Amino acid sequence: MSVARLSTEDNNRESKKAKRGASLVLGFSDENKIRTIQPNDDTLVVTLRIGGFDVKRVLVDQGTVVEVMYPDLYRGLNLKPEDLTAYDSPLVSFEGKTVTLRGQIRLPIQTDLDVVEVDFIIVDAYSPYTAIVARPWLHALEAISSTLHQKVKYPSKGQVKEIVGNQTMARQCMVAAISRRPNVKPSTSTGNSL
Image (tube, rainbow, N blue to C red; front, side, top):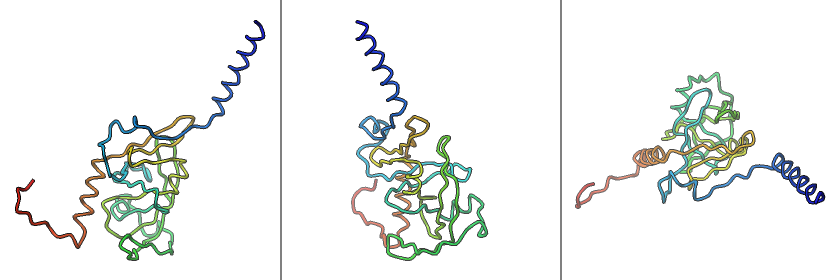
């Protein structure tokens, strides 16, 4: 009987050790879709604290290799040309056009109590987004993102934290981008209008 008791105590100690040293598993389940509009095709648009300010309309894009900042945010943060460093690598838009760059700046992005510094490329072009955060930010935060679940998850002090996307804002950005396209012609309909 004492052998079994000793064995149980050893198992409890091993279990506690395993829990202390266990790494967190980041993932998504159907429960993570509960407060989302489904089905969805939405981009993942979040609010982040960048350079000490809460910034809305930030696109999370794991397919992009650089963080991008657009003119609205550049002006909103009161950045000046002397705050920027040179960035001489060309950047090409989805349309295949070379984009005019103002330079780059290193700024902190705060999520809850975690702060990650990233280099933003300042792009002189229109976008419905204020910024794009990309793989460098996701990797520095050790985060994973899901457009289906409209969330970013990352480990922090032994817990899994979440940043929740804003589907309404994502859809407004999509409408703004589509209505801004130069080749879009208004449709002529003979039916009832919506």
